[in-house]
Length: 415
Ligand code: ADP
Ligand code: MG
Image 1 (cartoon, rainbow, N blue to C red):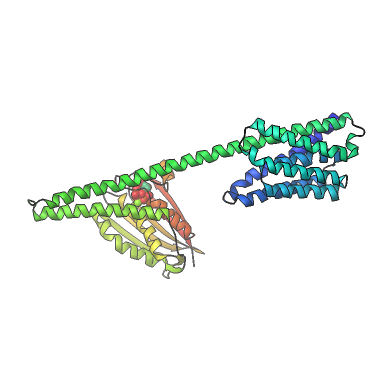
Image 2: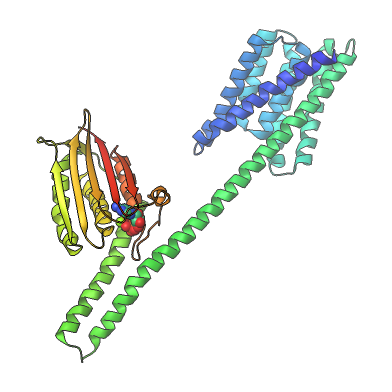
């Protein structure tokens, strides 16, 4: 007999725990939709109960003394009011139509349990485990005291079997409430860690942005002070103005990168020819490349235009960032090869340099905010590029080897 009860007990626990586990797995999908999350739990529990009705040998005693109150208490105290009402409905429908055995006492006592649970759920929400267990045990005792006298088969004749079922109802309740307690505790810790991580990111962000902006502004201030002196030559004046302007430019670049990073939006309305966009970007960047003594080699493998859907200004910004990175990786000159080509339903832009290249560790760091190896770099350029290209449904990838150069490929769906 003990064997039978324990088997049943384990089965019950299995159903509730599976529901709780599945819920935990699916919960991250509904992280911003608390209401959906609660409904999800009811749906999962409901499906498990349907399985139970279909596949398990239901013993009315175990169903009414254990499964109904334990599940209902678990949901009421731990999940939410709406799911608890749904659970209450599901169990009572089961009792009326599937089990069809003393459904009135089950309805009455489960209604009482539901009301008591809803009444105390806020009070026990933030208490420690012992208090939770005490409240849950108290409510379960009230449930059993209401149910048993109204369903005579429980008490007459009162057997060892009934005693075991009752005892195990309490044990499974304690197990479930403890499990829920530790799951919630873990969730609270996780939220706390996320919060700390956000604060850390914010501190890092503010430190980087203010540091990066203060540096060029301080140097600009210095040059403006020099300009105010009366004993400077026209040549010096020209130099100081240039330095001051480049300081301001640097601050502007950082702010632009930063704003794009914070809000990279793309308007996907325009039909763009990637060949034309690339040509336009090259015209813009050529003087910069010449400063670095870099030769630019461009090859369009296809005669016809290669159309994609996106936003011209954003695509140019991406290309500019990537080409600028390629140029900056060749401080002693080199060759920049740009290529466009067509695939069956996609188009590709390749940017290849013969610069310093990257180790596999550096390659893995690409696209991480603030990752930069440059003295005046922001480490935001590629973050913005990657998110803009993703928004245009494109795919970007890099291959590189140290001292040999880097190859960057961007593939877009053809329009
Ligand atoms: P920044 O250019 O401000 O440093 P990016 O996000 O554009 O920021 O680039 C991040 C880092 O990635 C660069 O500092 C550089 O180390 C590396 N990188 C990017 N492109 C290349 C490239 N073509 N060759 C070598 N290193 C590159
Ligand atoms: Mg860059």
